[in-house]
Image 1 (cartoon, rainbow, N blue to C red):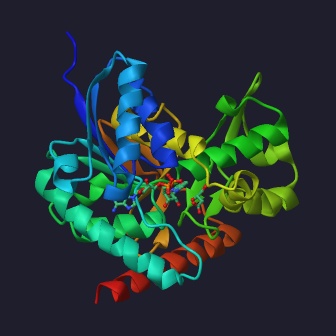
Image 2 (cartoon, rainbow, N blue to C red; image 1 turned 90 degrees about the vertical axis):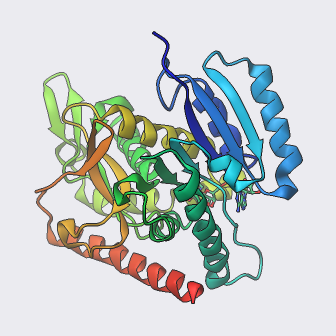
Amino acid sequence: MAKDPVRVLVTGAAGQIGYALVPMIARGVMLGPDQPVILHMLDIPPAAESLNGVKMELVDAAFPLLKGVVATTDVVEACTGVSIAVMVGGFPRKEGMERKDVMSKNVSIYKSQASALEKHAAPNCKVLVVANPANTNALILKEFAPSISEKNITCLTRLDHNRALGQISERLNVQVSDVKNVIIWGNHSSTQYPDVNHATVKTPSGEKPVRELVADDEWLNGEFITTVQQRGAAIIKARKLSSALSAASAACDHIHDWVLGTPEGTWVSMGVYSDGSYNVPAGLIYSYPVTCRNGEWTIVQGLPIDEFSRQKMDATAQELAEEKALAYSCLS
Ligand code: NAD
Ligand code: LMR
């Protein structure tokens, strides 16, 4: 029997990630090839005409799984009845703006969208924040949507996770699908800590640790980490635009695995509400290794953490605590 359609919200849908993301969702990349969807696309009034153009293209693409499109600049209409919300819309940093000015704009956007989601989304709606500063925008959304479970508010660090897999696969000249269990700890920023201490590669003679196969700790503790941390900036330098297709693809991976589960023996990285696991302060949206089952994520526990990792995990937590304080100062 055909499944009922799921309503999926994409905010900032007229932007460049939105343009890459909505066809992926309509093709079943996010929720599976047998799951019909109704897309809700939100943008702001100056982008309304462009948003309507995206809607026209979705109609023209005649996606069999796409059962409806709502394209709107009304946040209530956009949020009504959605079970998945991918928050891509935000205010970009413009010339001459201070960090605090950008934070202040985004805090007010996420505060008001939190209220709309809380009042109008379907019960148990799963939220993924992509717009930067992603972790802190997600935290503000959580604070201003107290009736949405903290388990349902996450941010995107899967792009960083996928970038780490990609770097290892290139270095070892192996299939990216044979590399698993890297970890992104902390913030989606240049302080994030990409950790390969528990990562493995599938080989003809079984799974082998990445550290053993690479056999170059200097590279793994140095250039590998900075390449992943700086990858977003490198894409901006090359494209004169920030990453879009890889960000859209990672957003699909994040929701796909959250809803449909992670494969046995595999974890992924998600920015989730910290409960103090791994001595990270509680009350931050911090990226952890997680497994997913029955639509719920669980932080992987008990991984040994060495001194090198501890310092890097603490540094990114410290940055998140400072961002949180800055965000709160914008609210007062
Ligand atoms: P973009 O500027 O092309 O698109 C953003 C869209 O958001 C625009 O269409 C804009 O009109 C819209 N918007 C602005 N305010 C809005 C509001 N209040 N409600 C709804 N829509 C609103 O940007 P992009 O390249 O698509 O990137 C979007 C965001 O994602 C940026 O913040 C970017 O830094 C971030 N990003 C995050 C990751 C990640 O891995 N977490 C990766 C890449 C980009
Ligand atoms: C990315 O990681 O590609 C983006 O977050 C970069 C950015 O600043 O938008």
